[in-house]
Amino acid sequence: MIACLPVGRGITPYNSNGGSRFMKHWVKIILELTKFRIALFAALSTSAGFILAKQGLSSEMMTAVSGVFFLACGSCALNQYQERFRDRLMERTRGRPIPSQRLNAATALKIAVFLLSLGAVVLLKGANGIVFALGVLALFWYNGLYTFLKRKTAFAVIPGALVGAIPPLLGWVHGEGRPFDPQILAVAFFFFIWQVPHFWLLFLKFGGDYEKAGFPSLTRIFRPAQLRRMIFTWIFATGVTCLIIPLFGIVGSRAVQMGFFLAGFWLVWKGFRLLRSSLPEFYFHFIFKAINSYALWVMILLALDHLF
Image (cartoon, rainbow, N blue to C red; front, side, top):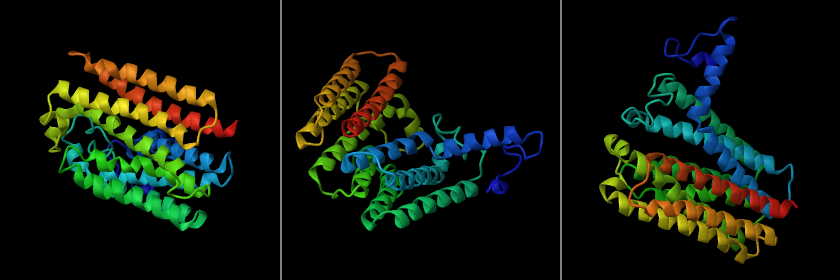
């Protein structure tokens, strides 16, 4: 696959002197193309779902986790291929591997297909049919439906947020839970709600960028103050949805329940500043990181409740 990389587009040919530099550059490109952190987050939420179903760790978990990780990496790479022309028009995305010409589009597509095939094979051979079907559903929903709707409506993230609910459900089913068990549906609903403010926060900073690339943007529909109030409402809903999870009997530890409450209070308190008339630009990025950290903390607490 390395031989497919274009020479003269920011990648140095491999030789004995420049080999290390070449490999570092190659790894950096792969991490950017596959949005490694997003794929890792999907894998972690899958492991949380498995641990909840199995009431602990098991070697079987790695089948679902690795399968979802490869699918998520491939899906993100495919998305960058699909949106390569619009990415060139946005300040936020023009530095990605394809628009920056560090990687040609054909090679990116090959990498995406390889990772998607690898993830599909792992789930097909190592898990049951429902798990495989959920993985395919997530791929279709993100690269098909959501990517299409994103070009049509600024509210595409609401149906698109279903993608974030699938990995924990997939892990639960792989851990021998049933797909419509109310316990995992409560967890999946939390991740669904969390996705909306997670994405909409980007509009506060990059709304003009989205418009420049031809994407519908909430900044064209709502004034900044209105948009901040909407996002705060969804942040508040995210915290409330998390507090509902223990009502379904999936959390037994009072310490974990208290952790949910404290984390939710912290998130809402941070988000409350969005209601102020003026905020420094850096604060939007701070809230974006805060809501992602909050979701990670919820996953950790859910896992800890069933590990100890």
